[in-house]
Amino acid sequence: MIRLFKLVSAPVLIVGLIAALGTAYFGRPYLYWTKSGYSQRSFLLVFDTAPSEEMLLDAVIYKEPLIKQKIQTAEQWRKAQSEGSRLFIKLDDNRSIIVSPYSAEQKADIVFPDGGRIKGIWLTEPQMRIHFPVLFVRLLYFIGGFVSSVLTVLLFVWLWYFALARLRELSQAIRGG
Image 1: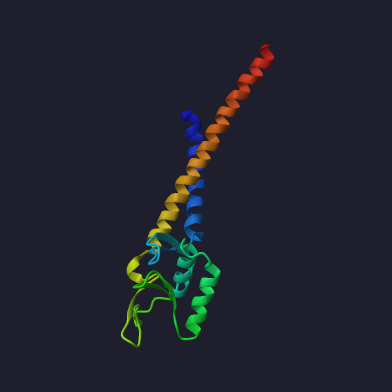
Image 2: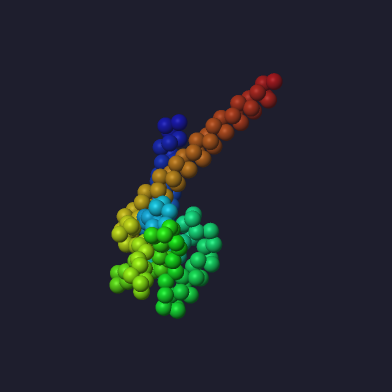
């Protein structure tokens, strides 16, 4: 078994490196860990390019379990934005979720002309998300691709080795019997 491992170790490492480089290169490098202002759940979001606030908002809408009509909600916030307003989801009498791309210039609270106020909560905002550096994400892809491919190849070699051993036993049983 040790001799077999020595024979396949170089090819296994080469396959592992090729797989690791492939996953690091082709993997989606923009990774965000974000928390929804609606359900307070956290989500991992991945993108091919640096996302805009609109892309982040759409991704959170599609991950948010409390939003049932995801496509309609995405269309409604775009329509409200084109009309110069924002889309709100009412939580209770005092709070409302703002389904709109985050903007530091806009306040989240709704203020009525008569002086009434509803506390606004952004569906997603920069304070509730972590952006992982691209180099770190690519390194994770590299390590994950390498380890998984090496383990897969070693498992295949191990199964092949024991399958051949069983075939040898079978052929000896047939010849001997």
